[in-house]
View 1 (cartoon, rainbow, N blue to C red):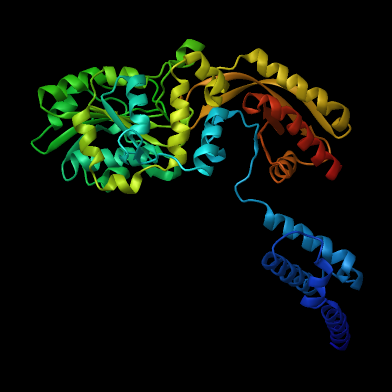
View 2 (cartoon, one colour):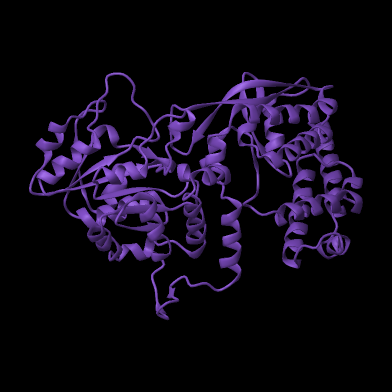
Length: 479
């Protein structure tokens, strides 16, 4: 047992020597001074963290030489840590996943016209709640209500912070403590594991499920109506599809039934659209205009997703009912701010010229983009990549399918073109991680042990940036 003890003692002595060689905090602060423009508070945090990291590395046996503790070794680590601390948590990324309305990547992109509006109202005072005609307090809802009504044919409207909030506000106003009849097949789960029944429960409404998961008939609604029934709710299944033996009641039939029983009809469209995407070969979805024309009392839908605006929940319907919803105290907690209003107003104005909307609203432009345009972008990326990476990466063009995303058009595949990257010297998972953690993160998708970069969701002015990001990863990690 004597030999192991001597070895242990020797190791302990070397470790103690290294620990004593760690510079003092004040000394290290002097080394770092002038190396970074970060605030003093962050510099102190980074210095302490770098020294703690060195201490742990010594104890774990990863640092065995005093040269790993001198100025030339520790300062770059501290500066790199400071750079990470100074990098915003909410960052720009390049979306090469091919998912147009990518919930995790910020959903819809705003047009440049909307960004200009945001700059104006954010850096200057505005008439958010001031009526310029009367000189008195005004309503923020009036800034977009007229636009929404003119575009959709609705009598009145208001906007809250998202569509789940819109549904909850409507049900709380119109059905609190009463029954709401809804098809069992429409009780969907939305993003973040929130479910329609849970939203309804929070509103105070009592859920009455009718029909079967795959088939619901008009008689199911008729048989469920009681003196406690407040309204009939239809939830558009925009984020899933039942195929095969399936039936649901058409909106016009629900409206007729409700009218005969003096009830209300509310439809949650989810991803509401103001244009008919079937004109460009996409699946036919009911537009907001068609839903309003069918006679519903209230319709709710998202301001982003297929509309292509900011995140918001839009509520449209008959004036008497919308006025009741506006008076609900819960509306105050769910109201939108000036940035959402500014962006939404700008996007809505673009819709008065449908071709202009298609050309300038990024979501619409990407969804209706022709394959030839995407193919040309992929060819440009290949030309910029091949000379620099083909020694270790196999790159090629490949036809693929993009997705709409955002809980909309679940079965819709969009013909697209991708550039595939297959490393010869590392796993494709490692490459995906390196790109995801790059200075300008790139988000692609892995298929068949290849990284796919779908050019539908890469803007024209991002092709060169995407190539630069790939080349930088290649140069920093050549093998």
